[in-house]
Image: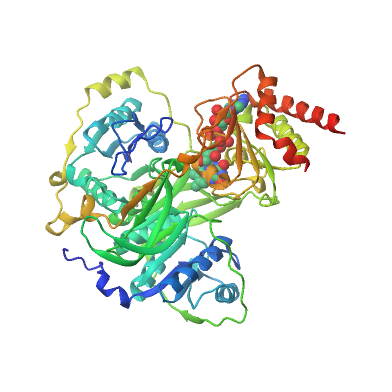
Length: 361
Length: 271
Ligand SMILES: Cc1cc2nc3c(=O)[nH]c(=O)nc-3n(C[C@H](O)[C@H](O)[C@H](O)COP(=O)(O)OP(=O)(O)OC[C@H]3O[C@@H](n4cnc5c(N)ncnc54)[C@H](O)[C@@H]3O)c2cc1C
């Protein structure tokens, strides 16, 4: 192996500290995805017999303290805190500086990030700074032994990072056996939030990073959140969702969707395409930046099936797609399909269901 | 401006796999990564308004010069292809290293544009890793760019539950950066006949490892040896999934009827 200052060989692995989870939060609330990662991180840390560490980054002392307690009660052994006025909102370079400095200092064996728009913004940059591997948008993490068929090296207790590729056509297992830390961004809602144990004890360590002028070349001017009211789609057994395919008469389209959903005893969902067009509130959005749903039946109306949408609904037991383009990706995931105009299908489907109900009554 | 483009297998065709579990690129007709078309459009819009030169850069097999020609058809000025066996089997870190070496050779730029991710790997990692290696700021998942009077820029970025407006504190002429563009940004334009002509004539240099002049200690940063991650296994989880049953017989009413009968959603909603 050639000399590489950042590279740790597996012989020195024993000296590495444990699992580090990079925590995201909105205000004083740890985001659910970070609590889920804390749960999974706890499991992985136990399997490698090491500590679970979390890092909290922010500005407000009171919120940081509250969240520290939440992290410990959800499984963290150590909470590292970086508090700075420039860290109030996520911006790339200051956050990268803080996390990369911490990693260099504490040398974790595994680092986990949420696969959010900030996690996927900072993690690759941190991996490049540390010169280690990174796997994007994992849907499972497993500790297992790896026998390298090429070098014939045997590695014990490596992190298997499992993720969909080619729009979910295939699942790939990625390993990074010669580089530490092993890093991954992890899709939310693939792991459960662990049960809380308020009696758990943990250590709190504050640290400072030297955030320099060039780190501050970009600033956040405004954050626009579109959610008025979140509709809880997680418990819905049936979801009827509308997308940009309703553009011809969006208002009528969503009325039809609501009517169908009501008839089926279900809820209304939407693609980001429909939300960004202003036809429906973000509280209905399904997908990577919306909700993750697992209904019995998911009916996608005029939705193309972008990976970011699929990420939120592929757990549905049955997927029905109505899209007039027979090449739309949604048909790769659907069980049943109609390649017709939604505006023709929806009224007729509603009519059909109404008739059925009358016969039953 | 530099725009990074990648040739990817056409997703509307099934991906072929070799016995080794890697993608069989010979089996699928490649296209320009759809996200990169949005990145190119972002650069072209700036060029329309403010002028400037657009260089498109791709790393891939020799055949990937097709995507560069496609970009030239749409209005890019020149293309460079990175192609070398030594670059094969690169993960995102090695890819970013290779592309950043080529960018250093191309020289001055005010923006590097990339698609937010490539539809084959979906990692969204190469852009930020290039920015880190070049030591320039990045703004990812950008949907809209606006320039202010003092030539600072504002970027509308897609985030959870909405958008975020990011502002550059320096004029863009003083602060080169890397931007990744979403598929929710301005729609790519259609090609012009004159562009096709230009693209056909364009000479596209092909650079190998030695052309991008790695330092002595950088030779192990390319391809497999520069890639910390390894693909251990690839599986088709959906191989068990039945293909979608599209209702094909009869008129719309009849199709709905058979959909309802097959899917039995009606019984589910009433129990
Ligand atoms: C960082 C990031 C996060 C994102 N997060 C999400 C997310 O959480 N959720 C999400 O959904 N998206 C998300 N997106 C956006 C995603 O990439 C797609 O742009 C979006 O899902 C497209 O929405 P759509 O399918 O409604 O629209 P389109 O892709 O425009 O598809 C419309 C479909 O309707 C069909 N159609 C048109 N007319 C008709 C008709 N009359 N009858 C039947 N069919 C018709 C068309 O054939 C087409 O397939 C995200 C993007 C980014 C960059």
